[in-house]
Image (cartoon, rainbow, N blue to C red; front, side, top):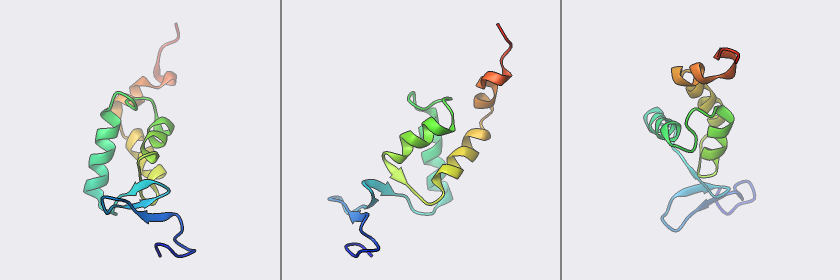
Length: 92
Protein backbone atom coordinates (compact mmCIF):
# COMPACT_ATOMS: atom_id res chain seq x y z
CA UNK A 1 0.00 0.00 0.00
CA UNK A 2 3.01 2.31 0.38
CA UNK A 3 2.98 4.87 -2.39
CA UNK A 4 -0.62 4.06 -3.37
CA UNK A 5 -3.61 6.27 -2.70
CA UNK A 6 -4.90 4.03 0.13
CA UNK A 7 -1.50 4.05 1.83
CA UNK A 8 -0.53 7.67 1.26
CA UNK A 9 0.21 8.26 4.98
CA UNK A 10 2.56 5.26 5.18
CA UNK A 11 6.23 5.51 4.35
CA UNK A 12 9.54 3.75 4.93
CA UNK A 13 12.07 6.11 6.50
CA UNK A 14 15.82 6.30 5.94
CA UNK A 15 16.54 3.54 8.48
CA UNK A 16 13.98 1.29 6.77
CA UNK A 17 11.31 1.64 9.47
CA UNK A 18 7.63 1.70 8.57
CA UNK A 19 6.07 5.01 9.56
CA UNK A 20 2.54 6.41 9.55
CA UNK A 21 2.20 10.21 9.55
CA UNK A 22 5.88 10.41 10.61
CA UNK A 23 5.31 8.10 13.63
CA UNK A 24 7.09 4.74 13.84
CA UNK A 25 4.69 1.81 13.50
CA UNK A 26 4.97 -0.70 16.34
CA UNK A 27 4.23 -4.36 15.58
CA UNK A 28 1.26 -5.98 17.28
CA UNK A 29 3.40 -7.62 19.97
CA UNK A 30 2.15 -7.32 23.55
CA UNK A 31 5.65 -7.56 25.06
CA UNK A 32 7.01 -4.73 22.91
CA UNK A 33 4.01 -2.52 23.66
CA UNK A 34 4.29 -3.30 27.38
CA UNK A 35 7.95 -2.21 27.42
CA UNK A 36 7.11 1.00 25.54
CA UNK A 37 4.25 1.86 27.90
CA UNK A 38 6.38 1.12 30.98
CA UNK A 39 9.26 3.29 29.75
CA UNK A 40 6.96 6.14 28.70
CA UNK A 41 5.08 6.02 31.98
CA UNK A 42 8.18 6.22 34.14
CA UNK A 43 9.73 9.06 32.13
CA UNK A 44 9.88 12.47 33.79
CA UNK A 45 7.75 13.98 31.03
CA UNK A 46 4.68 11.75 31.33
CA UNK A 47 4.91 10.24 34.80
CA UNK A 48 1.62 10.31 36.69
CA UNK A 49 0.14 13.03 34.48
CA UNK A 50 -2.67 10.88 33.18
CA UNK A 51 -3.86 9.12 30.10
CA UNK A 52 -4.21 12.10 27.79
CA UNK A 53 -0.71 13.50 28.40
CA UNK A 54 0.93 10.09 28.04
CA UNK A 55 -0.99 9.32 24.85
CA UNK A 56 -0.16 12.66 23.23
CA UNK A 57 3.52 12.31 24.13
CA UNK A 58 3.67 8.80 22.65
CA UNK A 59 1.74 9.50 19.46
CA UNK A 60 4.34 12.09 18.43
CA UNK A 61 6.86 9.26 18.05
CA UNK A 62 5.06 5.92 17.66
CA UNK A 63 1.73 4.39 16.76
CA UNK A 64 -0.18 1.14 16.75
CA UNK A 65 -3.86 0.26 16.32
CA UNK A 66 -5.98 1.03 19.41
CA UNK A 67 -3.02 2.72 21.11
CA UNK A 68 -5.18 5.27 22.93
CA UNK A 69 -7.27 2.51 24.52
CA UNK A 70 -4.19 0.55 25.60
CA UNK A 71 -2.55 3.65 27.10
CA UNK A 72 -5.74 4.34 29.07
CA UNK A 73 -5.87 0.76 30.35
CA UNK A 74 -2.22 0.94 31.41
CA UNK A 75 -2.67 4.21 33.32
CA UNK A 76 -5.88 3.00 35.00
CA UNK A 77 -4.01 -0.06 36.27
CA UNK A 78 -1.23 2.09 37.81
CA UNK A 79 -1.73 2.29 41.58
CA UNK A 80 0.47 5.39 41.91
CA UNK A 81 -1.66 7.22 39.34
CA UNK A 82 -4.84 6.23 41.14
CA UNK A 83 -3.50 7.56 44.45
CA UNK A 84 -2.37 10.80 42.81
CA UNK A 85 -5.78 11.59 41.30
CA UNK A 86 -7.33 14.71 42.78
CA UNK A 87 -10.54 12.99 43.84
CA UNK A 88 -8.48 10.69 46.08
CA UNK A 89 -6.76 13.56 47.90
CA UNK A 90 -8.09 15.10 51.09
CA UNK A 91 -9.39 18.67 50.78
CA UNK A 92 -7.06 21.35 52.10
